[in-house]
Length: 167
Image 1 (cartoon, rainbow, N blue to C red):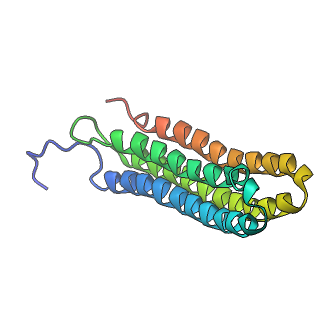
Image 2 (cartoon, helix red, strand yellow):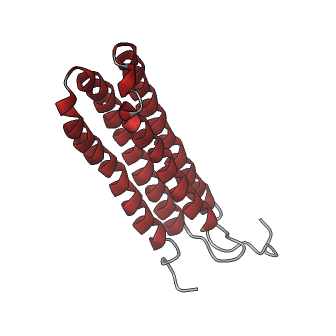
């Protein structure tokens, strides 16, 4: 690269930052898709026998959908922090953004798997025994909290970018 370039920082660092943004969105949406599909199968199966409970049983599908929003939030935070022409962007910053995206994305993926499995079994069980509804909701809340932990850690890690050197 020529010396007249206005680029400052490490030239490969943005690759890791953008990879983190992509990882946050892709993995969170994979968790959301799996949770929605698995829970949706349970809702459809349960709806054949007890159609009056379908709207009440849609809670796991909604909770799974929120996981994709967590990934979107982190992806936007990361992508707005990558502007090497305006401010130096070093490998430390790229790695901070990569770890931020992976933390949020993989937490969203695992939460989506948990929500899908619990949602599928929970709505079917709720159709047979209505007293199980509160227990199912509590388990779903704890599964959703896993993704929330990833979102919080992702925000903290992303905020560390830009602190590697004094410009």
